[in-house]
Image (cartoon, rainbow, N blue to C red; front, top):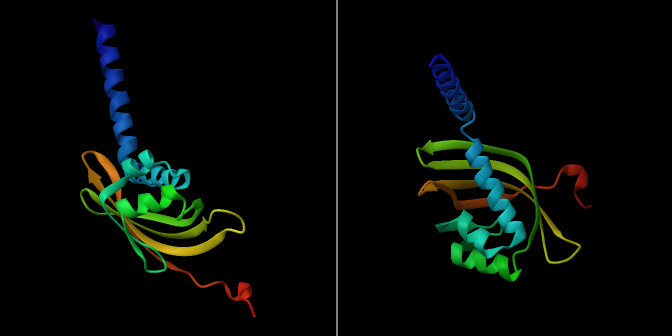
Length: 154
């Protein structure tokens, strides 16, 4: 009987330890959701895109054009919006209210069907919403960052 109590205590401690680790990094689920979105966009897999994008998606490109989930998925899967790589320089998350998270940051986005690719240096504001237990990408707005002074063409 004493062994059974010890096993229960160890199990309880393991569960508590796991819960405390998750609580120590609440952004882990948000990072995972964003990583899944980036993977889906690069792969252009319609099922992955549908799973990561909210039905209410509003995507405002750095050139000012606007897409919904339907139009953006269609562009990505058709190859007219071809994402080759997304490299973050900075990415931060902040829970605005329970179930709504803003992501801000900047990074380099490599786009195009063939080389030479179009490289965009962007800053952005994105949002994720918890929908039926899943963090889904609901909003994006970005703008182009100026080239560093040394890289400007004369």
